[in-house]
Image (cartoon, rainbow, N blue to C red; front, side, top):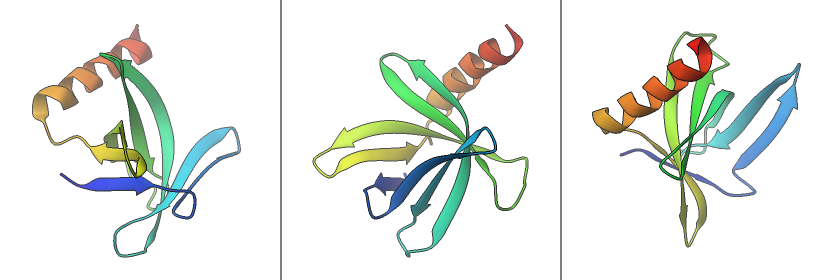
Length: 96
């Protein structure tokens, strides 16, 4: 599972042009920018659907917010069942 640890020096959260973004550094120190497309709450867990803003691609990613001794962590979802549940909830929000 790929893990992203958000710490003050490695993450920024901001709004621009009525959109919300997250910048963070990956394990190699590279800056990555994602648009926050949606927040989903399922089973008392928070998920973010992120879009790759820099490459202007149609790809989106689902990360789960977890807490550890190091702070807030955002973990990419690699469990197909969990991913499908988040996707289904997102479709309910979009399409009703």
